[in-house]
Length: 440
Image 1: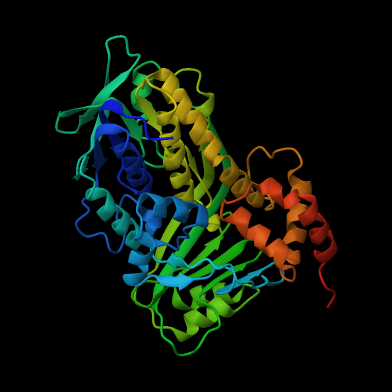
Image 2: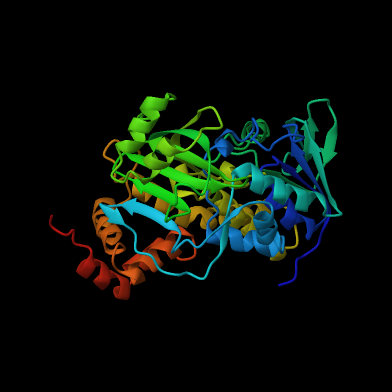
């Protein structure tokens, strides 16, 4: 289906990756696009205030990479040429979970791995080259304008009183969903919020990455019941190491305590990197109290010409690496919604939200399902959660020796297949056969 042109201007509030993806999609469907970002973006190589989680390890899953490459052809090679590490996710990992290492197999996929700011800058540079897209930085959106009967949003009010007229306003401001109080002022109820409490805290430090000592991995992840460590290669020959803990557990910003935390994990691969590498940054910490999902698809009424997208719809436990790819999937769903309907009205808002809700369903199932394996996790557990988690624990063991299970696990983890595909008969019998722990 060719993109359907809609008259007028689209305004995107929030210039992070979700907003950038949305702007790219909207550029083919509206006469013009204005992207409003409150941060000053002149120097963001080390992250920025509006994306505090950007200073920690990020993964771009294959579902996200494929869509980004489709919107910005050649960007993967551009990232690699700029210093991103090339990683085959089936070969170059040291992935330790469930008492052993994940089986290696060649995927044939060469994926760039880099820091979140490095990726965001590359995407932003591509978006800024789009002729009908205008990026305004250092500006604050303060409210919305609407028709006299309040049935339709007509623009955005900036902090200096300027009004930016719009046929469609997208709120990509992240977890806070800054425009929600504004639609409440128009008489609409906020979408219901579902939370799964995890109190995840993570501490990150950047280290020099050298060829000596030699290592048999390019990227490492070590997972225990309540703790996780990630060691990702960054551009400019650096390691980014993030240590995470559930329910208030966290690594202290102290050299000895940080190393001890890493050594408490069942594999010492990442602790060895910490011990043998020179630190080149301060410690950085962040906290995420819960997975959060706004049930936008269940809103009984909403103004036309307005919608939420990205983390404003759903924000996930960062250990699953789904945030950026979920935003890409929602942006793709946005485009399909706009292509399938003529009028940017309340029905269009419903269509966008329904598509966004569908796009986040699988990431939400993966994230919250895994988090409910922790007894302290709070929130409503879906029926059968305990049984599914027992099965998935066996699947983790099976993927240490069975490359078919390992491959399917990766398809699910990369949002290329639904979580239910792990229950397919050809996978299930392998899990049941190969998922028993070997006795010592």
